[in-house]
Length: 260
Image 1 (cartoon, rainbow, N blue to C red):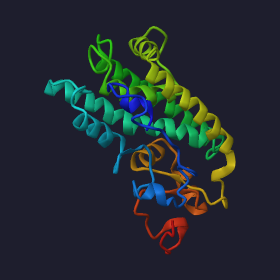
Image 2 (image 1 turned 60 degrees about the vertical axis):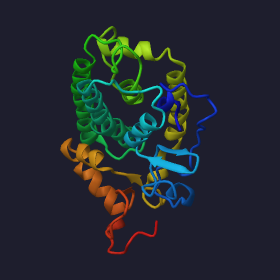
Image 3 (image 1 turned 90 degrees about the horizontal axis):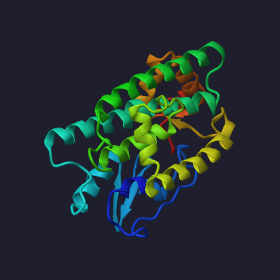
Image 4 (image 1 turned 180 degrees about the vertical axis):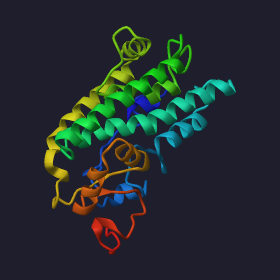
């Protein structure tokens, strides 16, 4: 469980541990993870003998299970504002960050197709960041006066973004502020280490390697609307992409059901 998810809770550091499953994100069979999350996705929180998956549901669970230190404002409108921020970051923004890896790390697009996708990533990122600044307003944190739910949702997505807001902009000032928190520093450090491993994978998702990247609905939408339909079609033909659980019979271009 990454520290970002418990950053606003007065919990002892050893209450939640952190572990990375082998072959994470490859679509390979993983009995220990599938027992906790049939989608084979992260994050997954295990609290005693109880498992929770999906980042939104995890945050909601923490809010309910540890009410003594709420992550959300009690004001209904403020709750909605912050949840809107989470929704955009968890889907639309995440898809752009993810697509950058598809193009620049795994080399799924080249030449004109690559340049078109990279240009769209930049344009759409700037548009999202502009919207995020309107949600931040003059508040020191997305959550309001204190660090909380909204900041936990924005921080890892924005940190991963290739294109950052201009220096001294509202979003940049917020970013510099939250980076000083120990839980945020820890999470960002883990991201840097993970990024090294991610880049080292290189051709691991090439045709014939047996590993497949998951095209969740919002990721698929980004690729198609941004000019990457050919990337998706090629991935399906070569068996290097997968879709959400339960997997369809058309996996790898055949009528045979998935064995993974």
